[in-house]
Length: 120
Image (cartoon, rainbow, N blue to C red; front, side):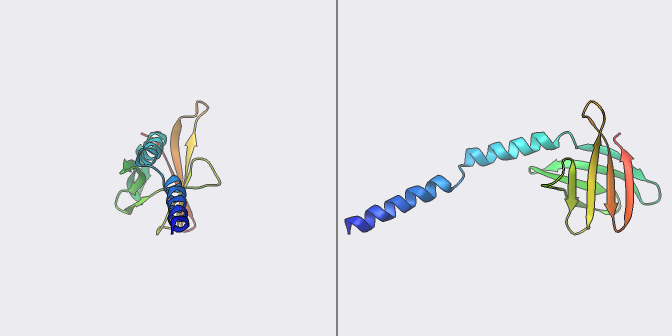
């Protein structure tokens, strides 16, 4: 019986160490939110397609809205910097930087078409 209790105690301790602590999760969300800030803002739209392209941070998630076309979460690509996908829209968005590493525009590929717009 003591051996069983000891084994259960070890298993519990091992499991507790593998569960992220709330403070760690909050730190990760804050880090992501800080990282996403450089993308946030209003970008020029595409005439006749959408008026403007707005990138925001909502609940720690990077969101994009092509005004009049819908809104979705941008998911960072694990393979390329400044590259995101939009699930459900089959879109890829790449943010372009200048020589000073400042985000200056977006390039969006969706359904075989490519759009881009400067950050306003």
